[in-house]
Length: 255
Length: 361
Ligand SMILES: Cc1ncc(C[n+]2csc(CCOP(=O)(O)OP(=O)(O)O)c2C)c(N)n1
Ligand code: SF4
Image (cartoon, each protein chain N blue to C red):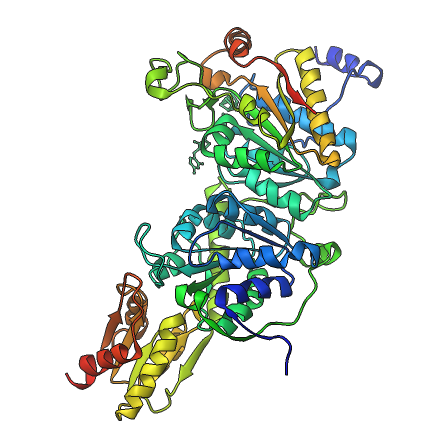
């Protein structure tokens, strides 16, 4: 068996390889989690643009808190929700650098809503990557602002009831209305084609920084199979059937 | 005549000093009685001259996290606020201390609790020197008592902050912030070049090049043994600060029987009270702690040997007095006189307090 695999792993048979910017640290993400794929795309884009030495990342508090262990660039690990404020200062003090935040939905759309809206409204020349998995992964599956109506979490075990818990927040639609954003898009990473599109969106988000047009905001509708209590395959299907109708994929703004 | 001698408010002096000492960025949110700091910066427009960034943030939570970002890049960054705003900043300050980042934070204190009053106060002593935010950390704290010191402490603050990679607080109050005095502004220093930052702050996030490891600004460490090591390193740093950075002023202490201990504006008032006491034949002196952490505990202990009593004067319900009692082990009586709610005690009041609590007893 082992020899068979080694026979196949030959340079001429390679269809792709790990980005040189992804470290060899084993990722702590649950199998099937979208974070791993999203990380890979960010690393590939930075590598493709050749901007490792010019890129400063700002990480969230959430499952991606250890993103600095996986992507080989300089990082700030921000307090919960404050990444856009941290990135604002980094970019303003080093305008020649590429600066991006990587945030979950609790981080970006609950505790950090103010920082998100105002960084977008000021038109900071940064890229915001927003992982929307509709739940708080890190703290064990509590309700997020993006949790769908009827969706069960540990703090709405009977399902999100809108009268009590309010409505799922469409942050991406919200920031698309602000003058300070130049590119607002919603993507996913559930199929190879979706991954390709998401990669293109992230690439565009980074390139936009040099044109000083304002914030590029890239939502990635994601799975949290542990929080959702589903197998990776089930989670992917559930996301397509339930998340996509409410959070439709595609560009919302591109100027 | 020095051209740089000006008449201005303490708040304005801070702004001018920031530009002159090569500050890279100011991030703040308006609140009385310190809004003149950002207003002055916006009038001066230093982004056109030194390149200093000035940004009005959406909140104090945002401004302190902007400091976290700016300081992580190895830049000289500062913010200013007043009591309620500084309360909002506490999580961020704890992160900055935990990630060992240098920065200068100004608190022009007003009376609390809550929205309280816009009038002066010193009721944030505990918040400043006892932690404020979560975790075991210390803020190196400078307490100016004049407009001149408001100007001088910005540069000194940055120097100490970068020396120890620790946040420095300039703990002022509405009196010092609002009063106008003559001030000699510091000479212009250029901002640090990117090359200089690479040399002196090798930990800063200047972009990962092939010949060095990643620079990561974080306060996170989930392995308990390593997190304890981090804490031990912080504690060792604070010991160093206690050994090397104590600043204070003594006035007429040589032959004093009674000592007034006061900082900031209360020290100015108490200096006058010492004069009145001397006119009445009472040998009084003043110890003015300039650093509140590290506290001038050694000189206080030295002075205690000759004293009959100590009066601590503060614009609060009695905060620093607890430290004075601790450091002197109350081998002499320690009494307290304070006003609250934004009331500034008069020198006569302080003198009478001294007289009543000790001499006429
Ligand atoms: C001030 C503060 N409040 C609460 C927390 C606890 N906390 C950590 S992560 C998190 C939510 C993370 O959810 P999300 O942003 O959606 O990211 P995910 O883990 O799903 O990727 C919370 C509430 C914290 N670290 N700091
Ligand atoms: S808990 Fe959810 S978001 Fe976190 S790693 Fe697991 S699947 Fe991913």
